[in-house]
Image (tube, rainbow over all chains, first blue to last red; front, side, top):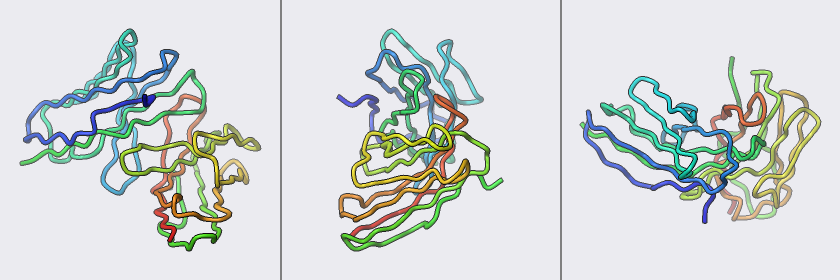
Length: 110
Length: 112
């Protein structure tokens, strides 16, 4: 079983749609959680950190469920520019070994 | 600020050749990392350097060596390239453990 698992997609949605991504992790001792965004042939960039209480940044909402060991990302009012791959990222036990999910590909169409 | 820079951007090697990938950051970060990214597998950690003067193995260190030259620079060396090392290599840096990582633009390596 992979340490961090994501639905690879692709998710194809129209502009304005709401789309949700889920991610599960296997190590219950994991301490830090992030969503990164990666555009085609570019480097990953931080989208947002994920906090236990849940957090929101504009159209993006991230949530963490420690009991079920999953993380979610909700994108509201999708834009064409949201088309990218979204990586779920988990840092285990506060160390330096960060585990990246394989990513979920999103296509937003006009 | 340039952030994290990597050279070269592209490289083609023949099996058995050696090369060094260079990485530098200007954010005064303590920690630096080397990852490889292959289709469907996500990024996998090759080596990391928690701080200047230290290096440690990650998930897939075989066939690679690293040098933390100073606080800014962290190089990755392939001593004898193999086709299985064809990949996209990313360097990253962070303030410390568990912190946000900032990535360079990547090096696309093809080993024939």
